[in-house]
Length: 327
Ligand SMILES: Nc1ncnc2c1ncn2[C@@H]1O[C@H](COP(=O)(O)OP(=O)(O)O)[C@@H](O)[C@H]1O
Ligand code: SF4
Ligand SMILES: [Mg+2]
Image 1 (cartoon, rainbow, N blue to C red):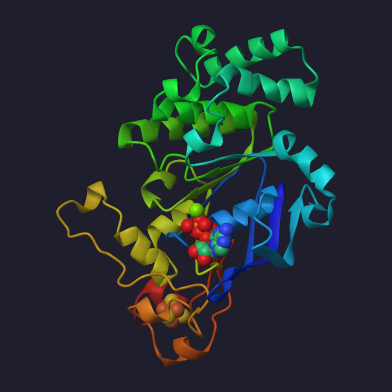
Image 2 (image 1 turned 45 degrees about the vertical axis):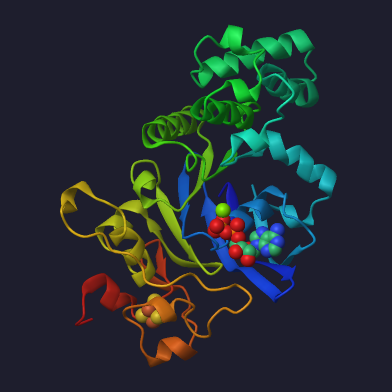
């Protein structure tokens, strides 16, 4: 396994008390594999990723348990200096908002080139040439001319390509893309996703794709991990989930995506809101919103049941969810 997160716990000290943002999350991704991490806003997707990257705000954040194994080494036990070495060359992150991730007063070519100067000891001139190559690679038209332009001179889609180029610069083994296309309009979203998928294949990288949009993951992901209230509630190969979800929350997410084969049907919306993480409901945290909830759901926390090969669901009634009411 390239990356393996085991039983990770992260909490934040807030004015309202302790926000339990990540509560025993385990997931993994192999070389050349894409894991999609799915869930509504506030489910702990980004915080988990920040812990993996070593860029969590501490304080107020605190990792209170678990392991993050990268090629078998627990990153939580490394010195900050060693971690910095892994960031960039070993793993890199792509954020939703390229404009705030890029430096507004430095030409994009220099920002890209800086990676090669700092990490590879290249001369400025060679680094500039590599920056043009990279911009070509992510299909920015007229890269040689545009290398001197500033971030604000690019469109949103082109800026996202520059951020992808930045993340790819040192050919890391793992890329974490946190809602990389959320800020873009739909056609540009598809182009950027295609580019990411293509680069992932070409370089055999592991990719963790964080999104709240099930629509984008079907074509690119190998596995899906669904998060709710800081837990993985379902984890499965992507086809299994599309065929039949084993958790009511996953079903709710699926039913709220427009699908061509269900044209004309009214779109479903999961009722209510995700919980406040300072006051996570007892039992199954999804029970206040779950159409299948029963008494036991209000008291007993469901473990991640094994529901098949390589598949888990944290629902007491996963059989019923998967196979129908008589199971
Ligand atoms: N810097 C922070 N300070 C306090 N609480 C935070 C901070 N970052 C995240 N949290 C808490 O963690 C929760 C999960 O956040 P996040 O991982 O960003 O969710 P998402 O699934 O939308 O990416 C938030 O709802 C919030 O309660
Ligand atoms: S454990 Fe109960 S409340 Fe939770 S998802 Fe399953 S049926 Fe719904
Ligand atoms: Mg997020």
